[in-house]
Image 1 (cartoon, rainbow, N blue to C red):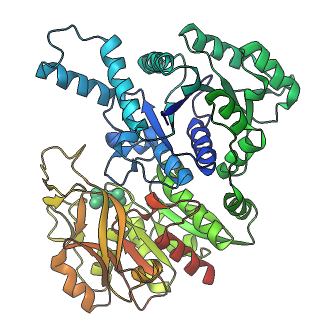
Image 2: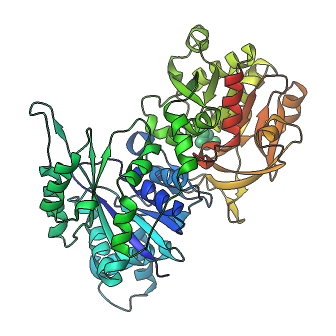
Image 3: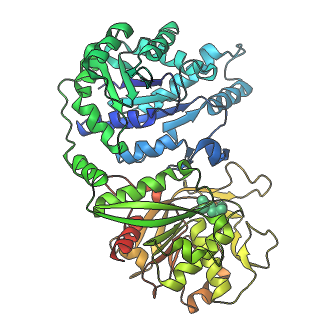
Amino acid sequence: MQTKYIFVTGGVLSSLGKGIAAASIATLLKSAGLKVSILKCDPYINVDPGTMSPLEHGEVFVTDDGAETDLDLGHYERFLGENLSQLNNFTTGRVYSSVIEKERRGDYLGKTIQVIPHITGEIISRIKDAGEGKDILIVEIGGTVGDIEGLPFLESIRMLGGELGHENAMFIHLTLVPYIKAAGELKTKPTQHSVGELRRIGIIPDMLICRSEQSLGRELKDKLAASCGVAKNCVIESCDQPSIYQVPLSFEAQGILDAISGKLALGELRADMSEWNELVKRVVAPAHEITIAFVGKYTDLKESYKSLTEALIHAGAATDTRVNLKWVDSEKLEPNTAESMLKDCAGILVAGGFGLRGVSGMMEAAKYVRTTNTPYLGICLGMQIALIEFARSVLGIKDASSAEFDKSCSEPVIYLIDSFIDASGAKQIRTHVSPLGGTMRLGGYECHCAPGSLLSKCYGGANLIKERHRHRYEANPLYRERLENAGMKISGESDGLIEAAEIPEHKFFLGVQFHPEFTSRLKEPNPAILGFIKACCAR
Ligand code: GLN
């Protein structure tokens, strides 16, 4: 079957949940038996979001093949239940750098290089690559219609839509239908303007998805259909929901599959969402409830831990538990405040992070759990912190630290390794010169689990697992023997690197160098995170 394309654009405002809408459509189409993939095009100039501050851009999601991508890729994977790759996200910066590289090589045979056709050509060829071998590719264009930087992308999908023909391309436009309190009314005008803007650049939407606080009702849907020139069954509402995982179910109930099938000539589509439906019930109204402490320095920016907060929801659905998070700002955690800030929590999580800020508070949290036998999951930086705290308090190495916090540290329990094997199997030498962009250990690596360890038990007794990484520093093997003799067991290893540490005597004390949250899905919660939540529930 020739690949069919669904292009998703956004209008009126950003942050309307285009990624969730695109992922929801992909989920329904996949449940109806189609081979679906999804692509995010980001109009910003950064080559990838790896160098952006989490304050600017939320989480950097890491794919199995080691690409640092937009956080929407995380939603796509969690909804679709599939690994995506670097083919599934690209930016303007990436497009320009490959066009410029080709120009320098002389590939364009003396031509003047222009936005049209060269930049658009590069965009189109990347879209086609992502669609290769799929029945349907969903292409989400980042940003909002009207953004200057988005124009080459819109022009590209307009051209591609024309080339593909009527039954192979569909345009979905997501807009906001605001509720004006004073008038007591939902307003359709912003959507009409946004569709007008889209038509001006040559794209006629086939479907509208309307975000709103309230249900639109038939009358408003019909009004939008008439004023925006789409079929009546192609106006889909997307009301605020308690859980993002309800969105596909709501779309399905409005007949979105029939509407898509009508446009793309896909025949009758029936999605089997029964398992999903059961899980969503447990997300929305679970039988149990616990509170865990989430210790980090970006507690004001929950978007930067998106995958982790979603992974906790997945583990909650699997255990029929609402996992409430108490966001604990590590900069406020001190020896005399740790107990009062943490004692009402069933477990404590220290998540990944960079830099020195907030680290001493994380160390206090690690000490608190160790001495009170409270379940602990330390992820990436959280594992490094646990080892440093243990080295300081139990081994008495008072200068123990990480080379990240103190370059000339005399006891680098966590150190900067200068070479490692990357996800493709190639040896990478760290440059040290530029600490930013492409100098991290990224992507999926296999990890050997010690038999009988807590880590292995979490993964159902597995001795080999694969999880994703995003870090520069590592636990220093020089301290291994001393740590182990004092009761901190190294339970995970990969090519000689220390990947996990645990205290066997403790109820649940696990530190992992990888980021388990990146592989968690609603239908398949990550085993390490699930193990932690189960330990918290048991408490
Ligand atoms: N900053 C630490 C490192 O680079 C941990 C990174 C992380 O938590 N993702 O090794």
